[in-house]
Image 1: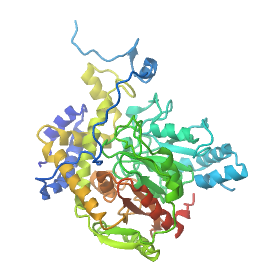
Image 2: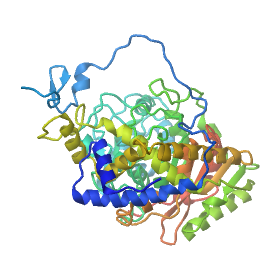
Image 3: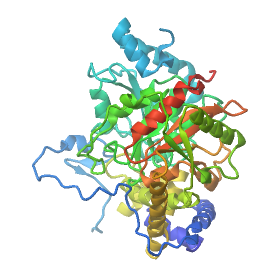
Image 4: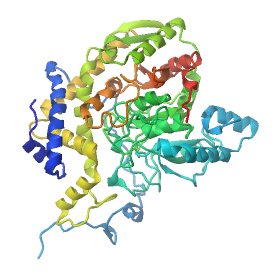
Length: 99
Length: 475
């Protein structure tokens, strides 16, 4: 495990779709470094032959259901919370470069 | 019956059945109480003055219930105490809300919380902090701090919270009420806005153990809308309320009585264990050797899953959208940077880092392996005991602002509650004493998966033989 510098935080912020100003970058770099230093305690443990637990309930396997047609939410309900919409669609800023 | 707002659901149910108490009176008194004290406690983010009972005759007929602001109530603002969800009105009820309505409960409002349940103090809410009814300068705990403070301050009869690393038990402990995190899979999370999907669980916060059993019975059970809910029958939990622990083997793990734990907390919990001995329980010394690694594993797994779950808040389908974006990616970035608070950003960054290329094995996978060790500790321990008794928190409630700039020290306040989440086990916090400063102290009881009845038996017996749960803060 390694520590985290400002460049790494900048990169992670981009992956997270967050923008940080210089003050935030300083703050989070320092805080994340000290959290990661604490977390590195896990390296004390040898876990070579240990199976990972992704889920606490052992008995739970994939859950399937019959493929039966059911009513879904009305479009008006789905769009009711949209910050921007047009006819039956969510409206977003332009994605493809245009003319 | 005086002061309806300070009664338990069980007492109110009896008064409605035997003395013709009008349920509207309960609601009126609660609204008056909220008007009198909530400007100081700030437990509510929404009070629904038009709340009405939709069904009668169920287990909670006429009983008002408050839910945490991350649980969807159809058509009512549900914001996770975050700017990014301001104004969001869910198109559906969460399954627990549907069940409450079917049981006759009255959904009277939404309780404050840490933003997206990220916190142990209720200070990260975009609405500002909730105050502990026992000492208004102190935090109520978190993240379900509004739910716990509302019940402790007699602004609510009962409430729902959610618990990912202690977010029901820790505030219940610090507010002197009863908080239960059920077994992972016992209660449907459909309609609970997700934080960490392998850990989250919804549960009751109540004034006593009987109400906890009543409320769990109303919300538990399999739900096809949540594939992690387990299809096993829901027992009548009130039948487990037996005043008898003779022969019950209670494990006491040495790793939970460590340096740095508050002296009053340690003494109250040790005294509680003596009370159990006097009542005929068999106290067994046990060891959970990987306890000290739980916080580290949790602060990888929790943020990693959260960073993924919170990707959906992008300004497209609901909530906030930032203006003046030059393209789609810019809209995502501006919306998220504006909408999320500090702690949410910190956890998204931490979680994304732990999942990012080159670090996944070292962090996320490693944490999942340590999680296995922690789970095995409990499995081994439960061969020698039926349940485990520990302090719920290392200290009583701390002051507002005390840990706000030190995330790591905040994270360590969940040191005793996190292991049960990692192992998927049920755990309760019940009042077991008061500090020299008159702040509540909680006893945590953990049991095997789906052994909530063992927890209720142990907790009910303690409650029947002590008076801690009867004390209320002076407001």
